[in-house]
Image 1 (cartoon, rainbow, N blue to C red):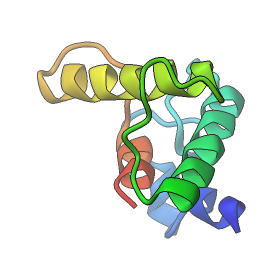
Image 2 (tube, rainbow, N blue to C red):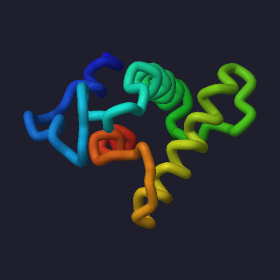
Image 3 (tube, rainbow, N blue to C red):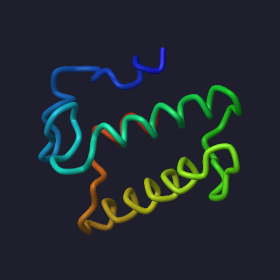
Image 4 (spheres, one colour):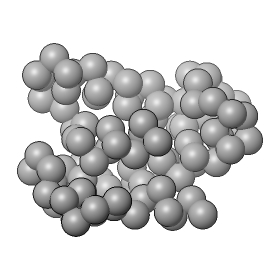
Length: 94
């Protein structure tokens, strides 16, 4: 199920880089992130890829969310402040 993607794979999943509940960084709206992630999983299951168009007519917010995740990941890799954390990266790389 889609919820299986959100289940931490190990007890350590909740302890990475200043993570709060569910492995997300504190103050980063985990419920909203999880909802968009589930939408992305469904998109992947239907389309076989995660290249959601920025102006995806069926779910415009999903396209913008995917773009933001890429930007957040890039900032994290550059050592800049970012809501991206190891927990989210692990989920997005599944």
